[in-house]
Length: 260
Length: 141
Ligand SMILES: Cc1cc2nc3c(=O)[nH]c(=O)nc-3n(C[C@H](O)[C@H](O)[C@H](O)COP(=O)(O)OP(=O)(O)OC[C@H]3O[C@@H](n4cnc5c(N)ncnc54)[C@H](O)[C@@H]3O)c2cc1C
Ligand code: FES
Ligand code: FES
Image 1 (cartoon, chains in turn red, purple):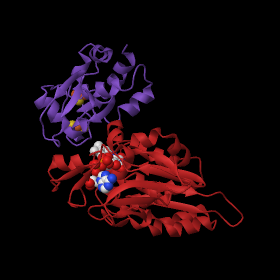
Image 2 (cartoon, each protein chain N blue to C red):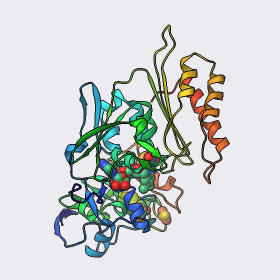
Image 3 (spheres, rainbow over the protein chains, first blue to last red):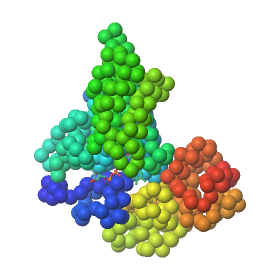
């Protein structure tokens, strides 16, 4: 269907789409309903990678033993989304496709070096997460292409997820951080850190990661992070506040009690 | 569309994109399900699909096709939670109440306070300040 009519708007859990539709801000009039495609709801291991179907809901992610074992920070992110009603309908594919800079699963997927699997009539292509978003609410997904799944290579190290918002649930997040800290070895340790709501898209912070890997003091790493991110000054909070929060989250992650 | 509504089979001719909330209220005459915000924030429109709470203001009619749907009317006014909300002041203006009760039904019997907090995080109440609601659920039997 999408091949013949690429302008059809895909529709999954509708937790973003119906808000726009109810408000009359959605221009689209023709839809392609994906909700019944149960085959796209599977969570499984494939060739060593964790493969999550685009239609897996937040509730599916929370309940999955595979996700809890391999990517606990994703289960943590799903638990922080909306209320149960939203968790029961909202999908990971919808979260990724919707491309909000505040999408809660996005920093997790960015830190985990996830791959977005896109399919259209012509075939499948795989796009690394850090090349998926091109600007504010812009992605490389072409009209007629569907997100069919997300693949996450094995993750080694301690995982972290934190969302700081105005309310525990329901809030559009002010700042979200996900990170993976590799085991310390003689030659240092690997660090992968991603943040949401500090830029037009989810971002990794390579300079901060490098500082962490080099074994710099936590104060120095925090300074690097505050220089590296350029948060948006908006109604929700000031850029300065977000920088400070990000630095605090980083310290909590690195100094460590909190697990994903 | 065909679906099972409160244990009875139903057949309707509605637009597939019509909000399930409106289908229930307008086409089925079940007005117990309330609309608060219409944007997924308040939970007043909570119903169960296959036993799981969802916001019916965000569900297209097409997604209920073939499914088992339960609204507050499906509890017949005799559910222990309904009695408890009356006895323990869990309802004041009542707008949030059907949604609160449907979300609470999904928690099963004797949920812990933590389970209640998490399970009802998507349901807002302007009147009670929540503690009377939590108390009602904990005392229901
Ligand atoms: C009250 C409320 C609270 C919320 N809280 C949070 C929160 O805390 N954190 C958070 O991150 N989000 C939150 N959201 C937003 C929303 O629930 C998520 O973004 C969710 O993941 C969207 O998924 P969906 O399946 O409902 O998407 P839909 O609404 O069905 O679709 C969203 C967009 O993605 C496209 N799309 C969907 N699936 C695909 C696919 N497989 N391939 C291509 N395109 C696709 C659609 O065309 C549409 O443009 C909240 C929403 C509400 C209403
Ligand atoms: S009316 Fe549906 S959540 Fe508020
Ligand atoms: S009783 Fe009035 S909103 Fe809850």
